[in-house]
Length: 442
Ligand code: FAD
Image 1 (tube, rainbow, N blue to C red):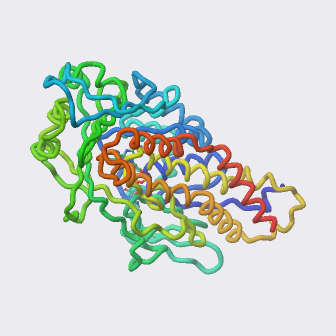
Image 2 (image 1 turned 135 degrees about the horizontal axis):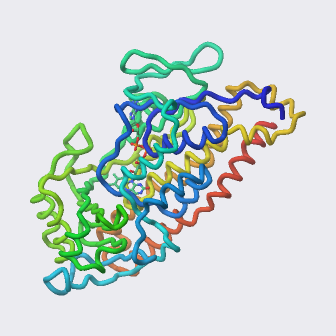
Image 3 (image 1 turned 45 degrees about the horizontal axis):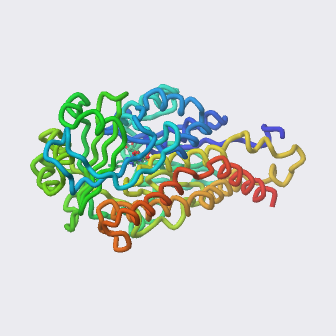
């Protein structure tokens, strides 16, 4: 096809988190002009760890193989390729170096599957691949307006404007783009408190090993218990232990912000009935902690991820509780589908004499691409939001169908995890491409 007949787009990405950055890398690689508008002064990440499941790794690779190479460079190898789910509550022995948490079940991760890294290191790997000219900082989106003819105008809080053919909201759980497309009065504009919060920390591995012994630190453990649970895995090439301590909270979240300050004493209190291993991990957390309220979009899901020439991706589209460790991975899957559908490679597969397609306006082609994106992504992503809530209850022995029955908990954890990890990402891309070609050809 003569590509001069088919203009490519100017895409505005709002938000430079994992979704926005991977999407930008995917689009640039596919010949699309991109600008990221980020409200912060620079790229920054919190001091916490993150893990990526096999589907996310495959999506990284298909977006741009350098993303996966970058991740693997900083990913910390688990000592075992099995995810260990242990009873953190009833433990025999008092000394965490010798006490034993009963292994309830374990799930095979695949070779070097579900590895973790420090979030800041992953961000550095993404930023290294990005042309700095692609990003504008201190641009907090206020509104989006349709222009006469094709195109959208973005207005920022500092009074400046920008124009683009399309906007993709990658602006996270409290997305402004989501509010603009579904309406500020619509409950789907706002995430809800899941009645769990997380206390997160990175502990020097030398301290963790001294307190717990090598075996409890070298791989991924989920410590189950009543009304709370704790996840640990090694990051920073084994020099740090990532800790996420989840606690059930019957109260409403009282703050405007999603984080608040917590004292270590509160964490100690929340896990006081757990066994010595979990209590020792909590004891190693710093004295002053951040409490992260776990919010999600389960109660009022966004009805569509496509609204004309505006789309939503990542947490802006489907914020989920983090209990499957898959939220960012799903943002990367979104980025893969969007960059494929908007990329010039796909358009050039249409034959030269496909006049019907050439005749379609840029806006119609763009809208078709976003509608296909919505069709391909929404069911899977909404399912993750729901399943993350359920599995959080399973890990805290609260779910009415599983209780503290480890066989039933295993069954739930197994099929739900595999539905995430084993997803055929290549097939998703193929289906999305076919759907778009069919739609464009009428
Ligand atoms: P964000 O990371 O929220 O990025 C949004 C960006 O948009 C930010 O940079 C923000 O500054 C910017 N922005 C916001 N509003 C505006 C505006 N109006 N204008 C301009 N810019 C704006 N996921 C995993 O895959 N694996 C894990 O192990 C994992 N662990 C987790 C543990 C915890 C405790 C939590 C809470 C989450 C975890 N997640 C995990 C989920 C993961 O963190 C999120 O899904 C992911 O970070 C979402 O990325 P995003 O780019 O969509 O949004």
